[in-house]
Length: 383
Image 1 (cartoon, helix red, strand yellow):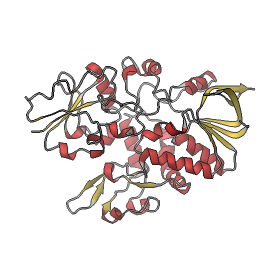
Image 2 (cartoon, helix red, strand yellow):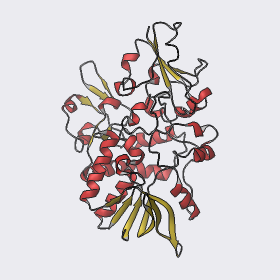
Image 3 (cartoon, rainbow, N blue to C red):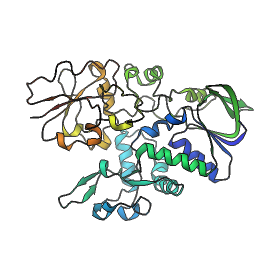
């Protein structure tokens, strides 16, 4: 490997965006990705690809989203910077950093336009953020209106293509293991591949290697007892080595390490961790249309406290605290057809049906999930 101007560690959305920005400025860029190419993309690959930006409504959005015949029948309300800031404060319960929040809100729209100019493709999120109206139109809600074509899979495919066009060298199967420091500065990284170890130096080093959610030990240390049981939706590569290396090099901790993004997840699907095919289809976000109970049949959250957008990422924590680190979503015959097919009719969905509340489901259909944290088994009672 040769010396580069900019070395980026991590091949998710953040890493590729940083690499593209540096390459656009004429820098020689090398990006290191821990995973093999077939399983690369970081957590970004596992997402729906939605991006929250402030905007003035449909007429502005159609300037940079892909054409869609449904646009003519769509109503997309403006999402102002003030509304964006208010939502950040609401979801974080006031713990968001004001300065960083302002940067995020003010730069969200121009950054998405820049990425679109780099070749990333965007669309309106009809299946997640719009309701059908009585006249057959589409009414958008909640502020999260724009997403990548092809979801997280499309996002990362577009990034790889853009990086190739911009001359970014991407090296897969290359895990950064430590930082090289000289004269009080970070000068490069040590790395490990399946064939050996080495060093790579650069004028600038950017760490975009994710968090530590794939490390049970670090989850337990920073999030608390029980979090070692959580199921990992995203990449198994985010085990926190470079965060620890940065701290050892004198970096300051930022953010709140005692909280995380944790969602309701199918506890009994046989392949419910780091599933490259189903990715986020194992999410079970229809809970506002039913009730959620623990193994004792007791409710423990307010399912309808707010739009799903504002509660889904924190209710996993409440599920994890229940016996067996699991819970059950219950729907009736009127609410079951309203659930998103992408989540509730996907292959292998965990479901029990009964004609009445008193009727037991099939014996032995579900076993204890054991280490099934931040997840929710689904029981569906149709009556």
